[in-house]
Image 1 (cartoon, rainbow, N blue to C red):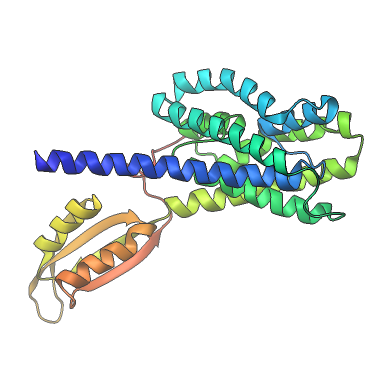
Image 2 (image 1 turned 135 degrees about the vertical axis):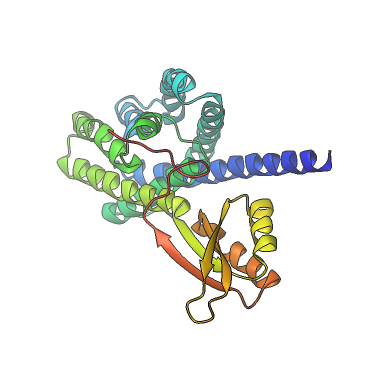
Length: 294
């Protein structure tokens, strides 16, 4: 009974953590879009790009356009990506809509005057990092993020590349309203920087490492890694070349962010353990990424 409650409490904690990270990502995205890009007339991609074009042409608030367009895409996400992804995306959409309303109430002009390139770099960095944080927590800002997540589910294509391809048309079409190719070029720069930031944030959370551990207390270490970190441990029989003693070699695959926890765990149990850690290019299977082939 207690173990069941413990598992449930950990699941609740992970869900709360995901929603808090999504909210943080939306705050970052809202700052990038409405503090740096929108007041400087710098176009962006996806649904925010469409909302910006409509805003410049008609003055219609961006948060309402953003909310309306996302409903149809959320229906598609519900069918393909599942209810869990949709719930978090709906949460993100409403959080961002609220944040946009608040920020636009206080921001009436460009924060950085007469420096569109600096506004472009800062806005794109905030937007890309914000989307990356949301994706890392199994959410998104909606729009082409949903399309990218659907493609990424079945094909081994980076999220940033999918979004970049989808958004080029939207950025180019902003010329019809802005009548300024310089602004359009800044929009392309926004796409490149935000895509780069997105991949950096998402890939940093997905980086994996492998451990080879030799210790006389292998059973205790293996049990603790299973129980505390929820990672599998494989025991391999080995023989020391110098001593000819039989040894147990532990093989562990884990996320890079879990490395310090594993090192602390090993040190607490056996400070004299022999540990080798190395980075791996990719890990596919249960608990890691899914295998995607064309």
